[in-house]
Image 1 (cartoon, rainbow, N blue to C red):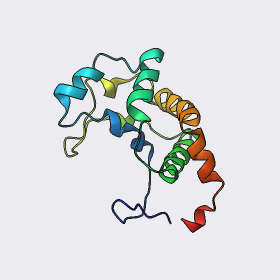
Image 2: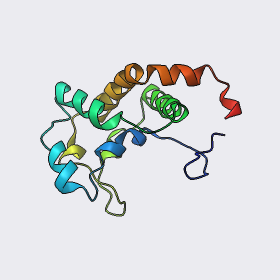
Image 3: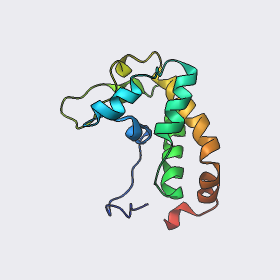
Length: 136
């Protein structure tokens, strides 16, 4: 089991890990204003959102590999509900730009995340895939 050196806890990623950069909670007047100019339903805007906000990460290559792998598993599951990841939860310290919970297809959003991550994170994913994950 991979232990996150940041908090000493087992690292159990979900596809929502890709959304940290678009979480506007307590940043509504800065990041929120910036993101509301972009439409996640428009392919060009969506690519910009993913490249600029979803993929930049200070995570290690192992973290990236595990996040990428968990997204692949979710995409392979036709029953996986990506839309729920964007739903507003008043109990959570998390929120997304106005109307993102009405995205036409959250699955398409994450398919694009996967496609772009496979390019942007290629070296990190390859490096981690060559290691024995049981040793992590």
